[in-house]
Image (cartoon, rainbow, N blue to C red; front, side, top):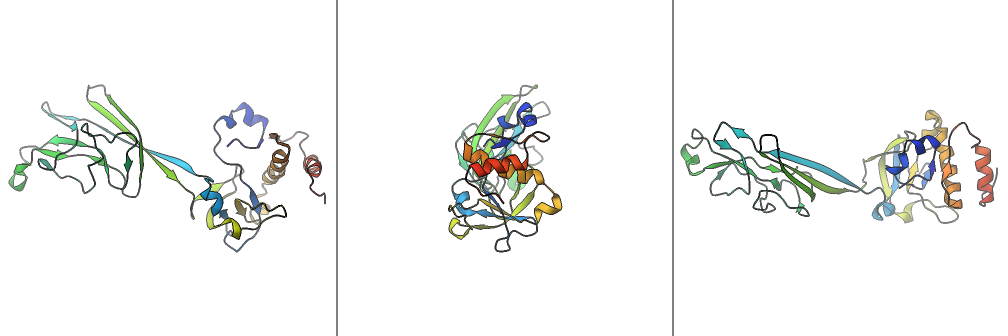
Length: 266
């Protein structure tokens, strides 16, 4: 999402064209003790609605290599009857060209790039004599799962085939994940509560994130507090807020704007 509050410098640097965060409802409060020591509490109901859900991409690459003048690696689906050293993972996701097609759902240790090489004569001894090829396939990391997003097959400078397979997976926030504001107030998720277990305002608004108030005095990130109240004005008025420093944007002016929105002055 584009941030509600920005500065002129960010506009000139085009920060808003590729935003890296979400406009969250943040409460600065102590609550249940699970947001102490730089940890934060997150609203599980917000997470279920897609809060801070992101896509993670990992690319796997391989290329055919030539060993000597005759021996060359080949992409393709390995055959268990004549291939030695095949992996424990599944080869069923591969097409005949040895690559998992885009849109294929893969999970831990599934083979996504199939590659074999001719077996050297000195290796084809004893029980290995019945094999003619050796497996050099690439499988997914055992702890990951996802969907094959893109497959790129081309040739390198030597005329040998080169392949890149990109796997896409959805990452959902969980306890232990690290988050940060634009002011460097970072913290890990210490606990998640459903919406009915979170505190609420008079209007019935529940926060998405609860940050410990001890993070403010020691780090002195006053800009974050100004961003908070400016963001509240921007949300009420329906316009983007300009919080450029060293201008006429002061706490008093923002407070007067909040008063016009129905908030009380101290």
